[in-house]
Structures are given as structure tokens and as C-alpha cells.
Amino acid sequence: MLPKINVELGLTPFDIVDKFKNTAPVDLVGMARALNINVDLNASFKDPNTSGSIRRLRDGSYLISVNKDHSPNRKRFTIAHEISHFLLHKDIIDQRGLVDDAMYRSGASRNEEFQANRLAAELLMPEGLVKSFCKAGLTKPSLIARVFGASEEAARIRLAQLGY
Image 1 (cartoon, rainbow, N blue to C red):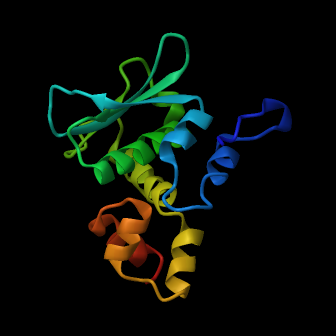
Image 2 (cartoon, one colour; image 1 turned 135 degrees about the horizontal axis):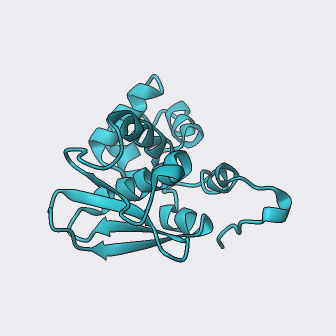
């Protein structure tokens, strides 16, 4: 069941995100939908290195488009990254969108890309969940990657960020 945004309760987007950070792997598509962001997992891009984009549609809603040819783990990171742009940089997302590719040639600055990548790591592999695995002695990057639907490299970086 997806958490619903309830303006009357004064929930912020980060409150909604927190509701998804209790189980692994995190339901990133569900998280996006709870934030009123549609997700297209079958997008094609002129540049095959483009991982995805987020843009505001004419009706004011948002759409994350994910490269259909990328691996499932890459798609998950891309969704987390684009949600991060929505949470952190919503004011610069327009109808042209923000496009993210392997070379970071998007409309966002390097600092905005760095911020989105850091938050994406937290959305994909929440600190509390990763630490609970590590406290149980499960610290292998390959295991963390498998449990959270991430690449081994992303898991290795996340474990290092958290001191493991």
C-alpha cells in the first residue's frame, strides 16, 4: 500500500520519503508516485549514455523518464537520483527538464548533481537499514548490493560513507 500525501496533516515530501525507508529494497517507484511523480521505465534517449530525466509537465505534474536499455540497478539509482532532484532542486526543473547522463552534462550544476547523488544513495540504501545489516555482520558490498538493488560499486561507496 502506498502512503498518500495529506496536505491537511502538513506532511512534507521528506516525511513521505521516510515512510519508504523501512524495508529493502526501497520501493522507489512507489515513493515517486506518493510524491505525485509519474515514472516511465521505458524511455528512449538520443544519447544512449543518458540515464534519465525529470521534468515538469504542462499540467504541473512531474515525470521521471528512465533509459529502457540500462540495467535494473542503474534504473533504480536513476529513479533515486531524479527523486533527489525533485526534493532538492524542484525550483530549477522545468518543461525541458533536467537530464542526467554518465558525463553529467545536464542542466544542473556539478554541486546540484553531487547533492542529488548523495541523497540518491540515502534513498536507495537508507542509513538505518544499512547499519542494521552491518550490525548483524552483513557487510559485504555484494550482499548489500543484492539486498538493496544497487550496484556493487554503489554499495561499496555507501558502506564507506557510513564507516564500514
